[in-house]
Length: 286
Image (cartoon, rainbow, N blue to C red):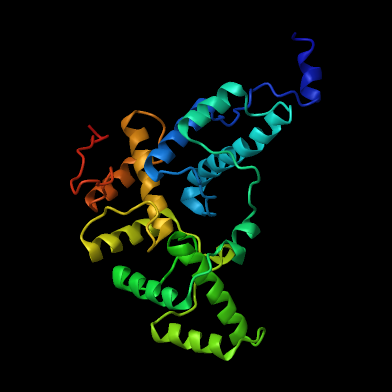
């Protein structure tokens, strides 16, 4: 071996084993899916937004989970076509018993943004929805992903895009549409719903600041996962709860002790309130 060593050195043989990135097993991803469904009551895992700086690891894990869920749909089609892939009969049965529904086709980002996905709703009802939204939340910063009320967020996005095109002289509108624009403006709607591609990035600190602002204004921190006022904040709150559970179980978690302490001090609820009372939780520092 000693005689061979110089020759191996010359060709750049790696004497130290590389440390490969850990992979997530099927069971780990499946349990993550179970937890996602338990919290959200659906399986529509959103594609995570790009983050910068301190949240790169968290974003990478979220993106892996999102891609894994998408692979379930493509794997299902491949299995029925006789191709070997991520799924077999046992895994399909496991997912079906959970209530997971396989999609025949996975919509692309462009397809999701198509106007056809927005329910045709009378304009008078949209005016009522805007007034209700403002009364409940105190603002009209509509998130484009809020799909309740006949996809209210999607409608707000489309009307904003059409308004901007008209203002820029790139699209002609009818007198009726111009009157509708004036009606919306009179209610305080600013036609500023952001496109997904240009929505600003949000770091952990920015989400924390948004949480503190919510708590200060409302006096509680029971933020729903799909809160229409700020969908990103709801998703972030849910992610902190998932990371908290991992921390309590002694598993690897991105919730550091410093972040845990800050959230605890700010009045963060580690389990969502369902009956008006907070469930007792474990202090991971004990």
